[in-house]
Length: 351
Image (cartoon, rainbow, N blue to C red):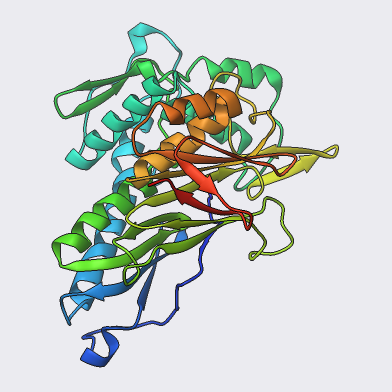
């Protein structure tokens, strides 16, 4: 599954060690990190505090859940719900007469698509999972190139989240050639569900990191977790624009500096504008969202980036318990309401 790459967050206090089976009493006061490959990325769960000695069963359940979600949401997996929806609408013409059939989906897929429609409406279409045909045109992951303008204009006709119809436990797209891509939100959904599973199994302090979707559970022995926001186009992975101090929150970043290609000295990146079919062109390098849920960070980081600094700040400031850090191309930091920053560029949530 081709997921939005937001690897540029780093947890400073993470001590990477691999464990399996039971955790001894002496190890319970040390961080334990478990790894798994899912959603085309290395996923980690680091446990700092737990009320159970045998964590292996819980960790296995978490990673099995991750695999389950990937199998449901991956548009390239022929057994997935999304593949079935998309394949039902391919190779036709955009007319009401050729509208797709209703496709029965799992409760998880139904819930996620309902949430995507909420974020699409909230962002006035800046976030839109029907952008899949445009994503495939650019094919930045495998064969990056600039599509013909006429192809983009033709394909844009199929991008409209309002064409997703939800009825009972079925999903229907209004027109042929439409397709869905959950790559910009599926990891956030998975991370949130894994958090619930960890809490239900008495894990009281942990950090989940799924390829940059970072979610903290509780605190680190009463202290905030320290998370870095990397400097766009920095010299190395430890070149930070700022540091965040948070607990029991999620951090997600969308930026132009990881997945891109250059043509005639111009950058073409993976954050595509659903209105134009081209990579977003504005004065932003990245948007980082701090929120209670990772799914919010996924959708809102993309939305805020697409609509730009001014409207993006207004959107984030209108939401409760949600914060943002925008980095413009002059490397200045722009903070939403409710965030404080000190002379060392350490950002905290105002009490």
